[in-house]
Length: 103
Length: 172
Image (tube, rainbow over all chains, first blue to last red; front, top):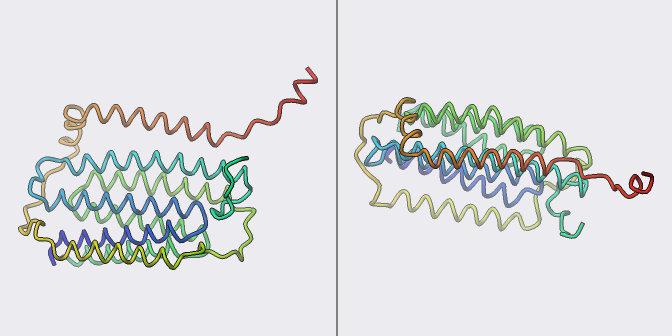
């Protein structure tokens, strides 16, 4: 197993863990945490392909990860603000109890 | 594969599994911080110094704190004996296991992955900064705009809902 395959396997397992958490947990914050883990798995893929790919002197992979981190930070901020607003409105952060769109 | 990589990968994956399976939300946030730190160590192990330290700054420093604050702000009403898993969790586990099997099979059997290992590439802060200021200057500006919009949006969303102003309107 080459180092690239090792990185890709770690990333795939991280993605699977994040997906399982985002789908199966009831708490809204943990669903968001699962999404963050999936984004980080994608970032690890970018870095692995940059490091072991054909043209590492072009720093495209690093650039992609930097922008991806910035977008993930924005997503986390807006998502947590939404969760706080939902909690204030419904008095719960359990995703199964937030069913109605009409306030 | 080197020994440090294996150790860091095991710590990262174990902490990720803990973050997704523990009952106590604060413990979940702590395990998540360990996961982010492990990912930063993986980036450093892969010779991406700038990304590794950016990961520590953004995720371990900011996102983890944000998540802890959100947990503390939304925690009071829940009874602790509630079921942790959503109904239908079994299918979620099966689907994620299928995803991992498919990805792992593809990774292990792909012929397109480069076989030879090149020398460690140079991605100094200087070269990254030059690229950000020349080739990637438009994405940089757009990202700045996006972050500003996200910050304002988060503040507006999380503001208190305005109290009903009918009574005060009548009084005045």
